[in-house]
Length: 146
Image (cartoon, rainbow, N blue to C red; front, side, top):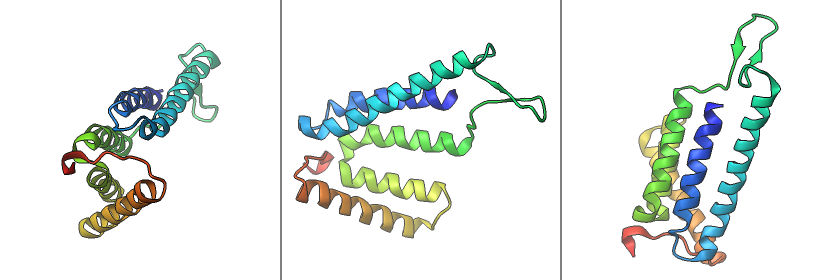
């Protein structure tokens, strides 16, 4: 349930920030994804609430304890980085904020060292920018580089 509430908050933030993108077409994809996540999260909360009288918690048959959504520190860190990414993208631009986000995720998951994570993150964001802006002609936020 906690993760659904977090997803709802991030979806609302994404929908709000998509309205600030430079061209309406650039805001269409993130808006649709955010609306889908928002609707599915609300639907999951409603289904969980209807499953039992205990607010959607399921009784574990083996130990008798209640099980709820797994929500650990890693989930909180990822959610905070995603919210920061969405907030900073209009100001920092797509390449800089996406590279920072990718590097942060790779470091937070202890997948690689700082320099390697930064190189991969910025390389990947430049590649995605080239595909979307160059090939597909989608306007992406440029931030302070404008």
